[in-house]
Image 1: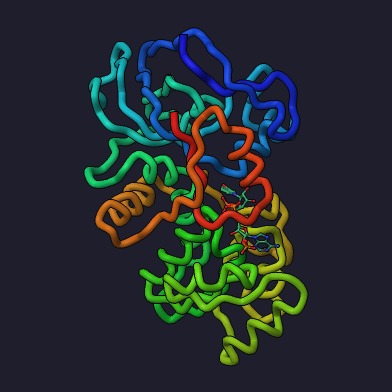
Image 2: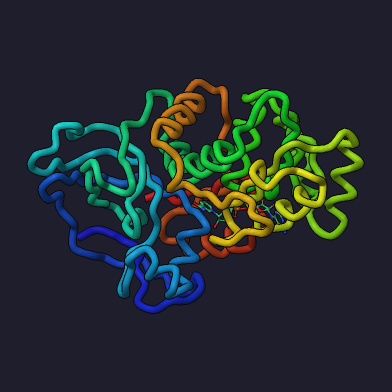
Length: 309
Ligand SMILES: NC(=O)c1ccc[n+]([C@@H]2O[C@H](COP(=O)([O-])OP(=O)(O)OC[C@H]3O[C@@H](n4cnc5c(N)ncnc54)[C@H](OP(=O)(O)O)[C@@H]3O)[C@@H](O)[C@H]2O)c1
């Protein structure tokens, strides 16, 4: 037997239970990962609370929980030659990551990829990377960020935002990020110029950047996208990841599924080399999964929440 987070009805953190379940085993083309850390994303609890979102991912009840993980391969199925027992890996296993063992498809058509963890990258950090890393890369690729840009990042201190701002700075751009005033110093560690989100955003951005902004990415709803449009940024230089499929004014909706896997490899290598930091805001043991979800659902986490097994 092994532990797994499961839920039998949709709802808030209270529907999540840690149960003893039979150990899964790797079938043909699969490996089994002994999970050490799971990285929590808003999508995890949006799925466990919202039947229509779960259905969009092909998830039905009863269901397992979580996607992003890091750990060690401990079983290799028939026909798998890319991995061996003992390999450190990280990646995604939709609705299976919050468990002692996750079986992962290694085939070329697998939606979520498993890759070797670079030396120098701790599991706690590797587990925090898959969804945010792919999404951050997609958010910036959609607007082709350049060193001449002044880019406005909405929701700059969240799990995706901390990567977006560092990637944009590495590209040489000037970065203005929205946050609550209490978060401003956190963003300044990367030379991000903070502005408060909420009513009056357009005027505050004008004050900080009287010469204007040239691009924007909205990681929290539509406020930043709308402000950028109002500031004269062309729609094709504004991306959103959290505005649904029909964002305002023809701006570009994108997400992790639009990224290429090499982007995540590059981010992981940069993190391993110390060139990008991944702030882990809180670490919870699996038994406290409800507390972890409640904290993130409050939407004021700075960096990532990870869950240990
Ligand atoms: N399309 C995709 O593939 C994809 C992939 C990943 C994530 N997402 C979505 O993208 C969004 C961001 O994900 P995440 O992991 O970064 O979330 P997160 O870590 O939960 O984001 C938390 C951040 O949001 C900020 N925030 C709170 N209220 C805000 C507001 N009114 N305006 C602007 N920022 C606000 C907070 O900053 P303060 O505390 O300073 O206010 C906090 O730092 C989520 O909605 C998620 O579902 C989409």
